[in-house]
Image (cartoon, rainbow, N blue to C red; front, side):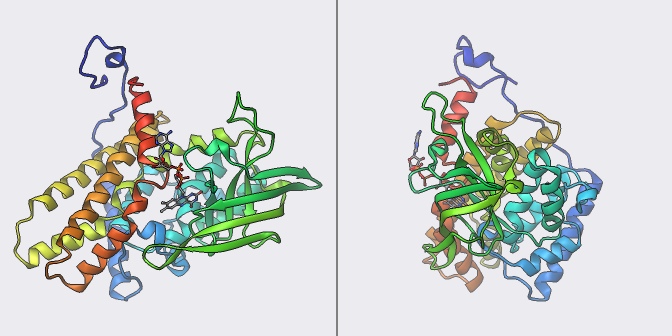
Length: 392
Ligand SMILES: Cc1cc2nc3c(=O)[nH]c(=O)nc-3n(C[C@H](O)[C@H](O)[C@H](O)COP(=O)(O)OP(=O)(O)OC[C@H]3O[C@@H](n4cnc5c(N)ncnc54)[C@H](O)[C@@H]3O)c2cc1C
């Protein structure tokens, strides 16, 4: 299809835009969906988890991760030789959607499963793949992300954490912030400068390093969120020795490595499903009260449309197609929808509500500010979309 630019004479109107066709789910995928639902129902019946809003960012439960892994539902796309299942991205997508919809506690393995495993497969050395992938697939190795710094968020190329070559490895010094789960994870993947900043080529000289969060010189300080809970941290690195074996991919190629996975990171179902447990509670509340809620209908329809867009992009990505712009669209529309679900629930908070609905609404409202910020703010992503459509 062509760009929706209103002026057909504008050059942007001739630019092709990836809007993949709606994907019809195969019977195999539907059966997998059913198996995950049955597992989750059983877990709920046994009282093993309480559904939460934003469970992929906040609900850390290694025992749950281990039970999922035992069914082969973590690191699904990792080849069997590295302990994975050799499954497709579509299979992973379906499993992920069910876990998010149920508000299941998936934060412990989230980062390792979503981005470390595919990055390792693409850029890691054989030694790193063998050392890390089996533990990731077993739900036993947990990762955090060390990109943002006190003065470096949207403009990531300005990171100041430095890694200097030493005997047998790299000495890393600097500080990271908003590091979700650093206090509970085993490693975090750090973006650092390994060569002086060249103002003409700001993206050069950046590298990724896998840092052991218990190594000497690592200090982790909690940041308590609005909800009073501890998800975030500041992480200070003081001359931390990272062995050569843990330099990730190519030294100096960090920017390319970081950005190459953004299509997966931004188009996934977590970008519109953090508030599905709340949407579910709103629906249940409306049914119990026999209430007609047109806004709830609109929010459910938006979520369903985002499912189609997101799964179509997953299909396009697995065919090796480029989807940066449509992934940014999912993230902007998805996180805006999540915020609108939280706002709608918030507007109803004053009315009589049962405990589960109230708890979900409160979680949604307190987590809401983060939805549009994490993974690249929506302002930045609108720039990506505008450039992709040739509008800027
Ligand atoms: C829930 C949550 C979890 C997170 N987890 C992690 C994590 O695990 N690891 C990690 O490394 N980071 C994490 N972050 C940090 C996140 O990636 C950054 O907050 C985000 O990239 C924005 O950076 P910043 O906070 O420095 O804001 P800034 O970059 O300072 O931006 C401030 C404001 O200015 C706007 N702005 C900036 N530049 C432009 C521009 N060029 N055009 C238009 N507007 C602009 C932004 O949109 C924003 O509104 C997390 C954040 C949240 C909310």
